[in-house]
Length: 403
Image (tube, rainbow, N blue to C red; front, side):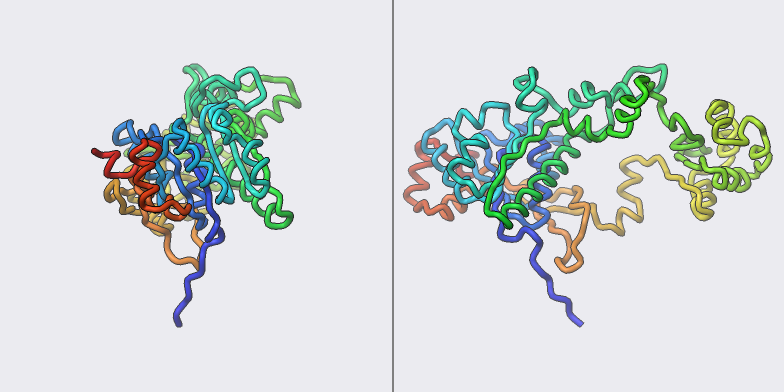
């Protein structure tokens, strides 16, 4: 029996992406993975990420797969006219340029919706648009610092630590895409567009809601603990083995008893230092010393097999090489090989699959200005018009950009 492949949910929806680096491009990447036609509007020098070597190339490909690139000079009146024509034909616009930049071109949210009330327009900033820091530059790391994340990350006696990836940029992309989809659904019902704002600081604060809620309730400043949890043990604690390390969580009484029995230490359940969760928290140093002594007799594979096959939560602390070799990751198909002007690049695809839509796309990111002529033609510009725009420096086409 053959299965027909259906269109993705946002097929036919046009998104204009005035994004740089991660937050906005990652948000529009989520929409592209849902089927939207995303046109990446770049300066003739390109998204700044294009100029920072291998890491930048990986960033560009990770967050611009399957998009179309239009290179345009917004400071050129004719280039600005092109951008405004493009926005007029769009359903969704997302941008994360410095506060005030889009407004200076007449492309801010209120200006755009005044002319095109159907549009959904999202702005992503570092600090928000209303507070005293609205014009301050900011990145993922500054949001981690000022939201309290770094204060709560790291060893108790060590310096504050950042999370090991651009976690707030990524979370902001999900927040922005979620809000955009909600506004777009409302537009389908009412015909009315919307202006949406979010910021790295707001998202970084939001992801800590339970911890901040506990602070508001008690007034007590929490302290960073490294690994583990403040009120249960063992929980998210690192166990070292003869060849590596893993984390384990077994803090309920039945799970702790099972853990101890599996490693041949049923006596620990009867030890008054460990006989209840409260006792284990109070004697955590001794608890971890006992557990690590036992797990040091195992390899990581042996420990994980023993625990997970018996219902104890545990997980390998993996390198990126381990992730690439992980059979569950492979089975999910989330690691893909993309093909495009930037070359054949391995990257990470959408974190979902639609059963009726076929396999994940393997289209790579576009070259700078790769689709300039194509997009202009769709907007009604003739070949002569396009040539004149390029000659005037209003737009960039690949031949001129690489000359």
